[in-house]
Length: 214
Image (cartoon, rainbow, N blue to C red; front, side, top):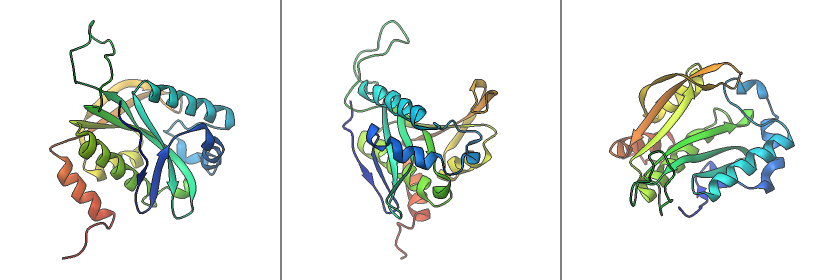
């Protein structure tokens, strides 16, 4: 399974998720919960502790890499995100079909998801740089073939942020899951392929101000 890392940028530091930051996460999630209409975000210490414990259990299986997001401008934990649904295509195919095979050293494909931010960190570039750091790890260190990103089809803001990364809309899966508002959710699926990463990377670097003028 991949080694856990801390990812540092100019705006944020993605730190390994742990029970030590539960109180910080509760404070972040409590700022203005009206911004979570289409996103399921734990509410209160009990829910947050269960959320972190579940993420750590999946991490122990090599199926997810969860992060707490530290906004360097304020030195506060302002949310969480993760590389998840890690699949390993190395070695023999598992049998029977659909069974979980043994995890390998590095994933072959992954999702980015379970991202939420405190209201004060939304629209600040924190989300964009967090995505850039995780995409860089996935494509440049792990050399994955694909990253998948998903959003409630009604979540215009989240979908716009995904599309601004340069992700390709693969389609909409109808009645895909239970939504955060307890309705039946249609989900928009997006992807970025390894062959698309160089262009996506340069676009993100330009938007993050990481490209020096000629």
